[in-house]
Amino acid sequence: MTNETWGTVRNELQKTVGQSNFTNWIEPLEFSSLKDGIAVFAVPTSFMGNWVSRNFGDQIKHLLNEAGAAVSRLEFAVASKSVARPASKAQKAAQHAPAVEPTADISVPGAPLDSRFTFESFVVGKPNELAHAAAKRVAEGGPVSFNPLFLYGGVGLGKTHLMHAIAHELRRDRPELNVVYLSAEQFMYRFVQALRERKMMDFKELFRSVDVLMVDDVQFIAGKDSTQEEFFHTFNALVDQNKQIIISADRAPGEIKDLEDRIKSRLQCGLVVDLHPTDYELRLGILQQKVEHYRKQYSGLVLTDGVLEFLAHRISTNVRVLEGALTRLFAFASLVGREITLELAQDCLADILRASDRKITIEEIQRRVSEHYNIRLSEMIGPRRVRIIARPRQVAMFLAKQLTSRSLPEIGRRFGGRDHTTVMHGVKRIEELKQLDSQMAEDLELLRRSLEA
Picture 1 (tube, rainbow, N blue to C red):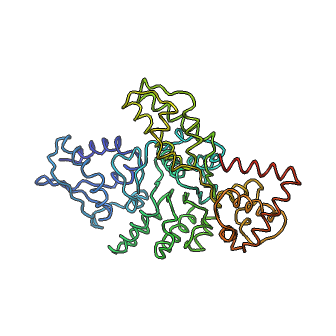
Picture 2: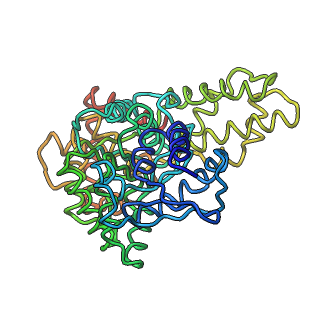
Picture 3: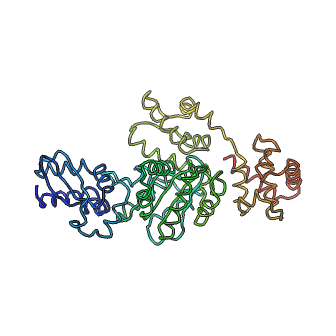
């Protein structure tokens, strides 16, 4: 085997692994020797050699054999300082970049991406339009305008979909960027592993050399003191370098229990966006998009009028459950050879429909009322008693009494630890105003309908 052979293989690798991967991982390799089927390559660090071996070793060996070199094993040796060429800036960065699977066209370091989760497949409606617009802006990869972007909302509202969509778009349009997407649990696992193996310097440089860091479900590091400490320092290091950070969680930063105050403060310093529970129109749009996909898979199936509208109305809390119900319905109708009618949907999805009976929470009421009256959620449960805040707070208490089964003391606790007599007074006051003030009656009806939709 000659350097010319390795040059041919390098060219093939550049076509298959992408320019970013090639620059970071393949370009620094130098062919040293081939003896007894063992191809030896010089690498700047053992850390880099291990990652290349693990992620690209089989691919390199296959291409070498195709080029005529009889290679049974690869070895990576750290080049001695007297022989090694000075590393380029890109090569120095590559020494600490995270691993990438060889099929990295649809994945980024850290965790694999779901090819279904793109901006094209994301259905935009009023509850998620701000989150979508913010995600699109970040995905453009231009100057950092808000850092971090913090997306939060309940299960199945689209946080992970938007995270994957951002990564897909950056990967496609800005392949030179080092984009890391992973869950908070994976971050914690890597941190613990680095501690155990005494490789903390590798860990620190690995995460602090990225261009875009994306951490999903950050609430999972709450209460993990050492992990929070390292996350805080990683966050600061990247912000200082003007690197983009995107975070998701199931609730707002200030509402994550056992998360350090300094981290809450940092997470709140960028753009915090709530993905609200879906409304009827958005759920119907999601179902209509899925049906277009299923018509190709289940050609010939008849879907009668009213079925999608029924599902959009009845399954309102979780988009994943909604999509799963439609998948089951199409599969069942195909297997039994029947058209998809309202009656079939009720029979086939009886368990899902029972479990999806609408359960309104106090937190959801507080959020909707805060939005309606244009006040902050923190003010809703805070101590201030000025009229512009106290009145919406009383409205939320009234709706919590009307639409949930919670007791007055429990409602009071959810409103900043207030006494149940305060709740009683607020409920009574709104009942009086409802009779006297047509605007109040209209507001209450509008809020009730939106919550029950």
